[in-house]
Length: 340
Ligand code: HSE
Image 1 (cartoon, rainbow, N blue to C red):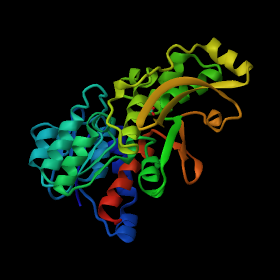
Image 2: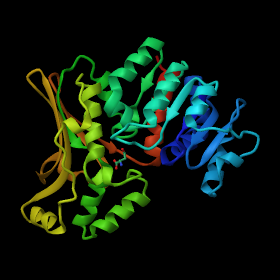
Image 3: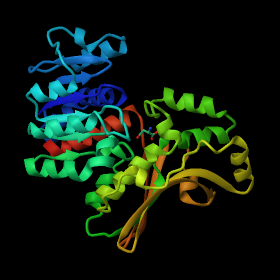
Image 4: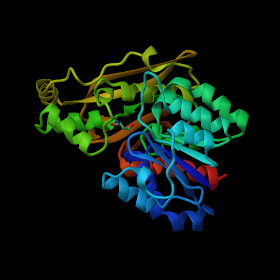
């Protein structure tokens, strides 16, 4: 499997580390030998080598502040789109930053890769939230897979759980904590830390979006509820069709008052059915401390899925971070190459 890694930030590097670490497992358990032939990153540079790029060297170069252009023997002139249009590869792994308003440049990357007959794996929420139906149709027409486990809850397999494991169940509602950064900030503020310090910590830990406004205004959670609505509930909605409120209005005093009343603020994303319609929203809620979602602290995510067959099923796990999101791409890759 020849791979193109498009986007070599936190997530792309997390994937590269896992490809190195899990090399033997992939070969032994799944018969897979992924070969990264290209890496393209607007900030970190580009490298292309049909014989395979040395991932250890690429990771070391980036860690040392060096450009991928200088890896030696693998220089590529042109941007990510040019590489997708020229490279010989089987799977394009898209992990560029999310722009929830334009879904670019990620959507162009996905379209180009599908056009060239590549399977696509992405952690980018933009293309899913804005163009899911169109991109899925393109992939189907080309007979290629279009997988995106990491877009919601990173490597915690929420989408696979709903899209395949719960086969034959009708999903009535999904409700939960879908943004790690805001949950981390609310947790730290309850512990006495100021908002700017808590946000800075979330950025350092690699949870926050490139522009953290997208987290604190609720847009990241909004993209995720839209992805759930479109890919699981069969809706065709855009993120800003839905009501959305973030955590920027919540003060330390609000948090203390909620605590005194036996409650805790959580930023809750929700998708539910109303007759034939599908609705979605994002808003802070004061949860009773006895509610299962109230006990989910730090950057952890949690979602309760209400089904006809099982009642409520709750999944709790990481929703962001280098290894957790890199792992989501490994799951998708194994599904493409090693699992039926
Ligand atoms: N900024 C996101 C979060 C990253 O904090 O959850 C994962 O989508």
